Length: 64
Image 1: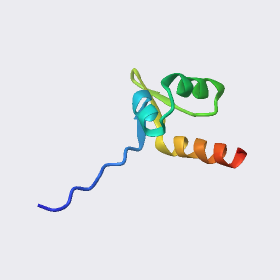
Image 2: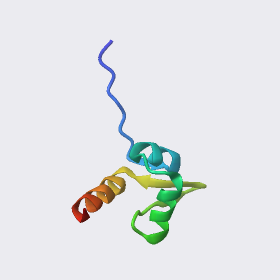
Image 3: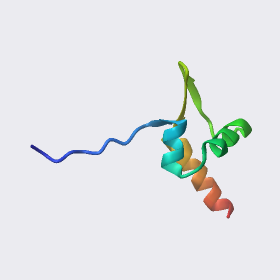
């Protein structure tokens, strides 16, 4: 058998985004509510793209 290649998701559910970023769910919801963090609703699930999370941290890093 060959080596296992890790999967890097394109988008996360809210709990997955919280785990990815170490931000609380309420903080993520707040960022979505203010428009700082774009998200999409697919069926009954709210999803946040990984690149949107990475861009958020890039903006926060530049502002600091």
